[in-house]
Amino acid sequence: MAVVPDRQRSRGHGPEPRLQHAVSQRPVQEAHARHRHRPQAADPPGLSEDRRVLRLSRPLDHPDPGDRQHVHLPRHDHQVLSRPEHGRRDQVGGGRISPDIRQAQAGMTIGSSSSGPEAASPRAAAVSITVRARPRGWFASQTSRRLAFGYLLLAPAVVYVLLLVGAPFVFSLFLALSDASVADTTASFVGLENFRAAFESDVFYIALRNSIGFTVVAAIFKGLLGTSLAFLLLQPFWGRKFVRGLVVIPFTLPISISVLGWKWMYDSQFSVINWFLSRIGVIGTYGSADWPVWLGQPHLALAACIMVNVWRNFPFSAIVLLAGFTSVPTEVLDAARVDGTSFFQRFRHVVVPMIAPILLIGFLFDTVFTLSDLGVVYLLTQGGPANATKILPVLAYQVGIQAGALGRGAAIALFLFPLLLPLMILLLRNLKRREY
Image 1 (cartoon, rainbow, N blue to C red):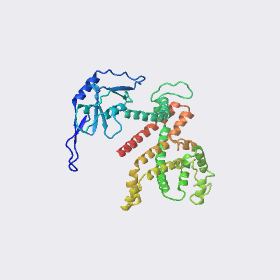
Image 2: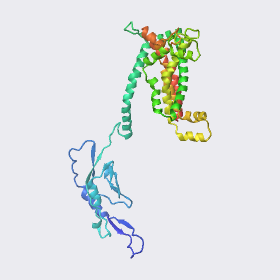
Image 3: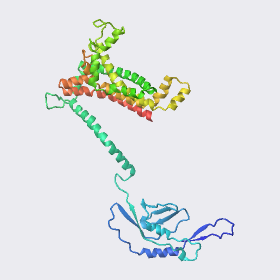
Image 4: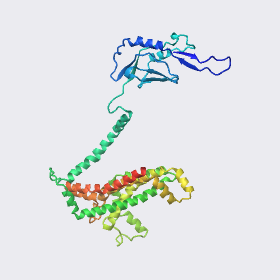
């Protein structure tokens, strides 16, 4: 390649000289003829299967007048070898240019005048470029590999959920559709007979009514107390971290210990609650007509169970709401305060819309925990007195485990699923609508 100046620079004056390429085609044709019949070297030994060798059998062409230089590969392997003038890395199909190509590129001479063909003869070279072949199959693209890695990370959690939830659910469905019992090792398919027998029982409707009332009232009180406690823990005061640790104690205590303590507090003779109410003059002394028997009177037994359930689970609601309140930016609340809004207006129009997804998820978990709460009611009253506190989990336990009718007990327990399914669908649709 020969480069000649367009015009000579005048003495100390005039613009910078503009260079143009004067390409001699004869040396290029001669170089092509020499290397066209040159035998190709054998592939280097030990070349792995995931690599291929591209051979550059044609001399390097002349650089374009632009900012990039190009090397063209012969026949169907016609790919562009590009290199920025000031760059350090060249690529051909994802590979790196070997030092041979760099030497060949450096061998193209640029002269100040076109004195003859020899000044513009490029250095022809046959070089080997080793590039890594693209993997084929499902893992060919980077996106597929990322998805596969994500599925691999999710696999343990999915297997855990299937074993912990899916397997018991399928087994319960099998029991509900059979006449399985503890007295017989064989079970035959009976269809919906167990569900029909449950619907014909009066105790089932009593348990269903108690379950709905128990869940609704407990959810309301846990929401109110949890919101109040969350606002209290949000305020700055001395020992706030210590108080936050104490709040979760009822939720973390073993249910047998906590319910046993409440059972002593509800004792008809040594009740601490009755003693306190008697001291402040709300009720009379022990033995009087207005002395309450919390776990022995039907109109008080269910209220006593609701009180214990609220005491155990409202810290969970408070922690969930506290997490939502702390996620609200203080700048938004300050702007609403500057606009003259009251506390309840800020809570209704600013805080609640921003933490609505957290509220819905917390409400869903709280409803599931309350409707399936067996321990509190069974340890306190075992469903009495006179079925006043009998809820569906207690009835399913008594029929399926204590009475030995596994099929009927499983049918009663599975009735909780159609109760919770519409609520879950409604809440999840509302949550998805708020996200978009």
